[in-house]
Amino acid sequence: MDNHSERDAADLDAVTGQTTTGHEWDGIRELNTPLPRWWLWTFYACIAFAAVWVVLYPALPMTGATGLLGHTTRGAAEQDRAEHAAAIEPMLARLRAATPAQILADPDLRGFAMAGGRVAFANSCAGCHGAGGQGAPGFPSLADDEWLWGGGLDAIEQTIRHGIRAPDDDATHYSLMPRFVADGMITAAQASDVTEHVLSLDGRSTDAAAAARGAAVFAENCVSCHGERGQGSREMGAPRLDDRVWLYGGDRASILRTVAMGRGGVMPSWETRLDAATIRMLVIYLHSLGGTEQ
Image: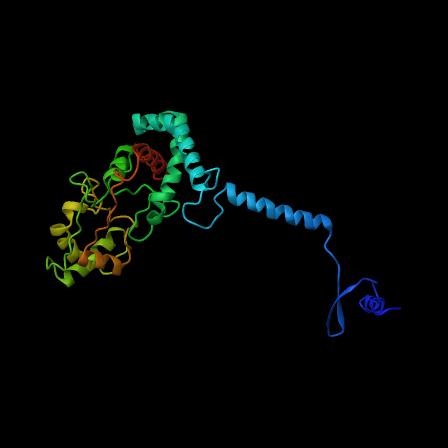
């Protein structure tokens, strides 16, 4: 046997009979097993396909790359959006032309408005008012019957369009809870008595003498907005005080803080931010959440 035959025999694996690469680690020899031809041809085909794809589509990692076909996913998305907008435009035009009451009376418009309003609410309103309109401290619930400015269709639309304490000239809702103690209108002791009186309106007062003193201070400073019995005023945007629905908290400390330092949240004006049809859809959706006042 010549030297070449001896070397080939030395490179054969004793167990499998296959040749080895000559590499050995800790007594383990690496077999020289070629890849299947079908796998190799598939691999080469993928390389060729990738090369064609780079030329035809914007696969190069560089700004402005579009490929020979001029296709981009952004452009495709814009085309889809334009097609969708064209498809729903007839319904949107009907929404713009109809009053909220007319939308409610039309089953097709009402269903379309409810679906669109739910999406618009999630996009623009849920961040403050919660996914279900349940509200949060400082952000009113939209899913009950308590509305500072009214829960009818027209009142809801007015609030959405022009906001509350928003920079929207004279159309926005505006009310002011004074800083009674901070501005020296009453003393801290009087504020404490008024707080006790407010607690007594829903039966929670524990100091009858303080509540009686607070009633006199309340009559001089608070009745004009909140009413003699704390029933509130939608015309003034003054909340009821004789129930247990509170925007900033109804415990003694929170009420005292409100009396002493005042409150004043802001609801944005959406008229310049949302299309008129979207506002109508929001009106219908919110009306369905909050007691369905007429």
